Length: 88
Image (cartoon, rainbow, N blue to C red; front, side, top):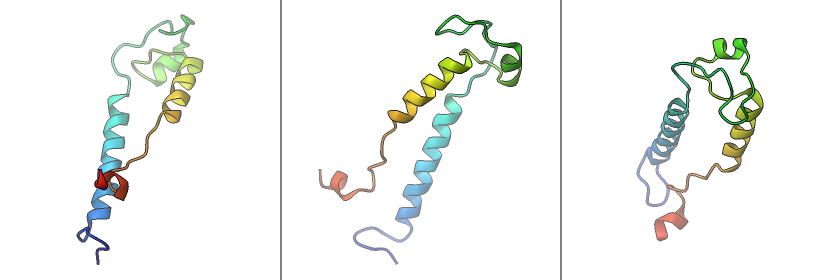
């Protein structure tokens, strides 16, 4: 039973769409190809073990951690289903 103006299953469809978008975004950010010998940000040598574990790696652990921390802080909220966004 749907509540309000939404049809049955609409909420699940929004959840599924959000998950699919997150998976696609994560896949697009995966490194591939040849790994760099030196970090693109700071120039430090990337250890062989890291290059072997993550094909296509371009950043050292410290720079990668800083980048991921910055990305999580900039994350948005999916407002597609909120009533505020529907009223505008």
